[in-house]
Image (cartoon, rainbow, N blue to C red):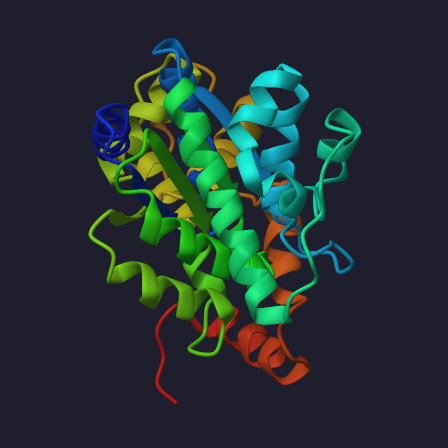
Length: 303
């Protein structure tokens, strides 16, 4: 949060920034972004969200379309016309709501695909920079591991151009989903070259933090055996840890005197089962068979 707040302060000083939040599912990427947006809104910053989805069928630039739609919906028509400038017609090609608000658009001549894409990227970037001068902006791009390639290319373009703007772009992604050939891997390589970009990797909570959470949730002093059992089972993953502790509370396992027992057996909640199951569904049958054996053998084993 300290790094994100510092990036926001830079943006408020007309030093645009891009921050990428990485981590496994349930580690708190989206929640951390939400906490930042609360802080940003308290400082008079407008926050716009774009979310990528795992389902097929979303149009190109979908997270950017959501961001621009949100801004268009709440903006006065004449102010919108001024901030869109000469690129209004280009952006209206992917965000029809602009054409509904500004009905006298002059559409430019058709260009070759690469030229048209460059013109669109430049129009969107210019618009966001212009809008951020009226009111500072935070743009959150959630779940970028599911983003289409054009959306990622636009992110690369924006990162190169936002240096002198009041704009902070926050992207979240699961680093466990990436391979060398994943489209986002290439984008991350390009962003690394930009001085305005930072990457923050979120990891699980420490054993001490797990102990604090259990005590805050149950209002009881937790035993070392209980803390060790929860920490070992969840590795400090906030989503898994929360569901495990909530299940223990619901079952009365954390009632007075219960916390003194030893040899804790931590049952996995249904929500955690489902979350892990969705990850396993993407793996091959052979890989799932190996993981089934591994789950019995233990966390570490030789070939």
